[in-house]
Length: 603
Ligand SMILES: Cc1cc2nc3c(=O)[nH]c(=O)nc-3n(C[C@H](O)[C@H](O)[C@H](O)COP(=O)(O)OP(=O)(O)OC[C@H]3O[C@@H](n4cnc5c(N)ncnc54)[C@H](O)[C@@H]3O)c2cc1C
Image 1 (cartoon, helix red, strand yellow):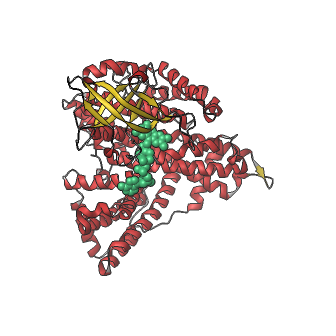
Image 2 (image 1 turned 180 degrees about the vertical axis):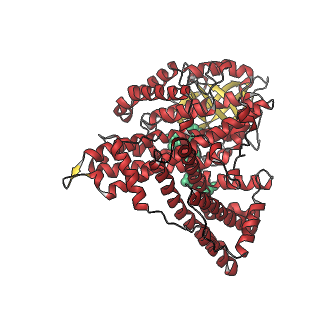
Image 3 (image 1 turned 135 degrees about the vertical axis):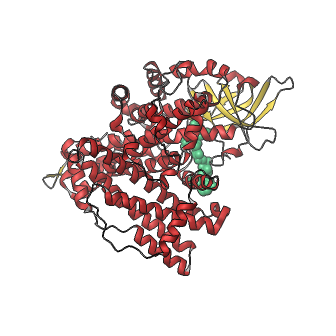
């Protein structure tokens, strides 16, 4: 790890809200090393050759083909990037693992789900929590794709409430085995996996416990039929029944009662990786949409020339660009935090665990935002294709159906919205993020007389950065008052939490795009970054609207009288542009660039 990393003051998770970040301190896709770029290229080649060229097979429920592609990915080492070298992996940094996850996931949701379930939740619990023996025994096989993993948390009665599962683990009289009995559902990779991570309850424990269970049908394990699903047609999803399945005691993961923690920490990683997995899908949809819109002629004009289509293309490209900015910013923060913890003497295992946990707020933010953007982009992709978009013969239709699952698994978007705000409030209570000080300062500012000076916004992004700082004040004003009013009962006010989460999400995303672009404009020049500058500005404009709307909804629902009036005035002041951006001009500029390049060329 470089001295630079150690010396750099890295923001703690959630601190982006109360601290200003220098653009030089954010990592961007433009900072990839040559090695990472090569890895990206070889991943893309694999996808084009094995997945994209055969996307129809994934639509025809060719589960065997998904499995065959997973084996090929294993042969190429693509399943092992996150696995430490000691267990047969490449032991690459967090950014590299995000990169592979990103570029391998764009062609079909079937493969990306199989890949994510195996490398993430199917393998990670062992690398993060396994004993040395467990890791030596299982991880090398999982890293090469000789074995595949699956993750059994969900049950018919335990979905979002994951700790309420009824699957039981009973210790044998001789103390050598646990006997596991229960029903798991929606298990990705169940049809072809060799190993399950299973969560079960011992006696009447408050919390579930994790186990590594080898898939052996002679050991009381049976599978339901493949689920008939809206999308990800070739991802194997089955129920798994355990009937007195014997599991050696040494296959318990971590300690008794630690299963919920394992499940949640695996999901933290899963969430940011899922966000990454929704990036390339957006890029590919934009590429297809741009090509089609350039070729499709109506009213004697390629449809890309119509403003209505340009607006869609511009918004699609903007979302993808902003999502990339936020994902890789967070990924590098996690990588640096892991490095710092290792330098402090933590094992890699502990460092990775704590490093990701530290940024659980950002992981939830990204999961929600990017899964919703990919849904929007695939939807607009269909619209640009018109009737052809509705046809199963074009990849738009399957992209739209495949995208839908991302809002449901790895914790639904409702649960992740609540988690993002809830975790932030908890961090503030523990003193890890000082929300109280800045929230009090905002309160004082609201009571004071506003400045009537016209600020100098001549420098690139000076107004936008000032706006982001003010959006943070909106969050502090709304969330701070809500915490004061409701205290621990705030968690019962879900509609408020949803609004607060939306504000938080917009702040992180808008800021990430501005910082990436500012950094790049400084080193590459403003002209070559003109479109990226337009995208950062357009996104912020839309973010301000969302913050204004969600802020207002929250304020009028819990504040009354003078307090309400003051907060609404504050909201107006904090979301006011001095120079309104010309949104039509921005969208036109972005769309024209995508049209000229016949696709998305900003990564
Ligand atoms: C294709 C697919 C693959 C999957 N793969 C796996 C896998 O490999 N392993 C695994 O263990 N699981 C897997 N899952 C399960 C997935 O994680 C769950 O479906 C998800 O966590 C939601 O649980 P649920 O379906 O029971 O919905 P529910 O929890 O019943 O939720 C229904 C609705 O209620 C909302 N809701 C629930 N609780 C609250 C609350 N407290 N406050 C507000 N709203 C709430 C939810 O947001 C949602 O909108 C998969 C699911 C699918 C569809």
